[in-house]
Amino acid sequence: MSMKDRILQLYRLNQVDKELHELISLRGDIPGKIEDLNSEKNQLDTRANELRKELDDITLAENSVAQENDHLLEKIEKNDELLRSGGVKSNKEYDALAKEIDDAKNKIKDNEKASKEDNSARKAAIENELVLIAGQLEDVNVELEQNLTELEELTKQTGEEEKELVSQRDEILKAIDPEDMSYYERISKVRFGEAVAVVRKGSCLGCYSSIPPQKAIEIRMAEKFYACESCGRILIAEETITA
Ligand SMILES: [Zn+2]
Image (cartoon, rainbow, N blue to C red; front, side):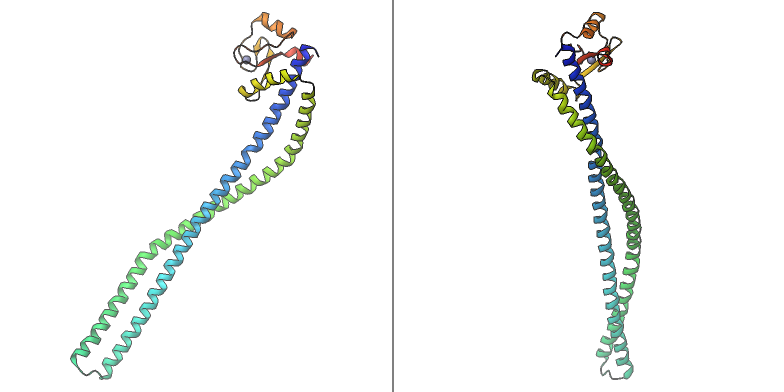
């Protein structure tokens, strides 16, 4: 194989590698996004559950206060009846019953005040936050659905494209000398998969630095490998590709 063909093979390999790279990076973005959305969804669900639990606890506390008040009311009525019935023998007993009634009335008042004032603000805040979370969850779910569909589509499309590119790559590799290959891989690693650069009108298209005219002619003749002095990429003349 001529030197020119060896350079051309590396150029072709690089073209395929660039496309493969693009395919993978295209898909690589979406799984991460899906993961982020799922964790956002979990956080929102957790927060909503906490709030619902708090609301339940408040209702439970309110119910137990209401129950206590019912008991207190019963007690008041009972004491009231006793007092009215005239069955109370001593002043001491009378005073005790009257005091119980007063205490119960006060306790009921305190209970009602505490439960109404403290809870209504908190309950409203919880309801507001729950509405907010429901809206956010809806947005997250829509976005999640979109990304899942996109990933599915992309995997369907790129799966075949990737297979095709890999088989092209295998075919090109058969024609590449192992030594040339290790040279290519060395540069490819440093240059993020772009080991070969085209020379057009006296410039390296990899880094846009200019190539001296004499060297540009030598690159066109392609009798050996030339590396760009500023970026280190393997240089190939545009004429070699289009020929
Ligand atoms: Zn360069």
